[in-house]
Amino acid sequence: MRTLSTLVFLSLLYPTIVTAQPDITALNMPMLGDVTTIGLCSDPIDDEALDAAVGAMQTWDFSGLTEQSQQQFTFVDPSGTPWASDFPASNLCGISWDGSHSYYITGSDVLATEGNALVVPGPEPQDTSKLVLADDPENILALPYSFGDFNSDTFSGYFEASGFAGTVEGSIDLEVDGYGTLILPNGTYEDVVRYRFEREQTNTLFGSTTTTTKTQWGWVSPAHRFWLLLMEKDFNGFNEFDVVWYNKMPIGAGVTALTEMTGVDLNLAPNPVLTGTTVQLGMSSGAVLSSIEVVDGAGRVLRSQAAGLQQLPTDGLVPGMYLVRGIDRQGNAVAHVRFILQ
Image (cartoon, rainbow, N blue to C red; front, side, top):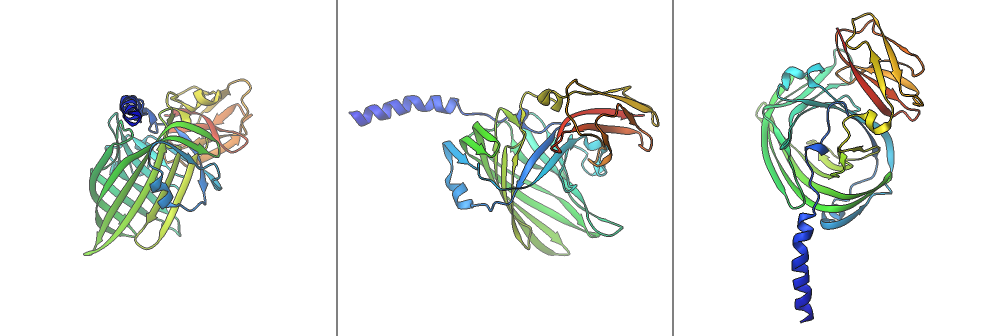
């Protein structure tokens, strides 16, 4: 009778647990203007331990991650980037610290990608590597999602590298396999949802094929925007390598600009501004910044000046949209404002 009572109690409790599960929505995806600071780590991935840590009410303790370097993702309007014409449906471009541009289609029901592009470092003329999935994009996440959800998709397109071009086709299988508490070096986060996906891509060039694979674990919080933690095991057709990073300064899901998060406010006047004229730069009282940077649509820092200067010259800049961002003493971008040069 005691066992029966316990079962009845659990059966009554279970629906409550299910309805209380956190949901990840479009509000938790990156947005235009976001600058996300991450800690890139050197820790190897224990995939067996990760695959065992599934289910409800998990505690994932990664407080001991070894940070190797601090890097940033910057999210800009694709129209101002060098490869905008290759990715016509994308409404967001994420630029990573190595200059890689990833083109995304964001909406209320999906996060998809049309591919990516990167200028390969080397002697002039530099080569460009591109993966273009514009005709059949890769649906990474179906939104909203919560614990227990599944998502599968196929994609196809072409790649260009080193003067050669080939075709691409692949698939992705994603399972939302856990939720609970995530402990990182910068704090503890509750109600975090974790997914795991397997991605396989087959590249065909001159009749020969190579296959690349990726296994990724991603932790996302309904209270924050962007990933809190990402771990990835990659095979590029020749070598295997791990990628581990965590979000050092998560932005709240309801926050629409960095200025609202930090309390540092930058403003420019006039805006728009005519090419060759000088912009007056202002900031909130008490703001502690070390420098001001001007960044173009491709994420390149075109100029940097001391934060105490109140004037921002525009000579040498071509017409277009630019991002002016404030950098604190630790090298983090903590405020930004956009301006249009006519």
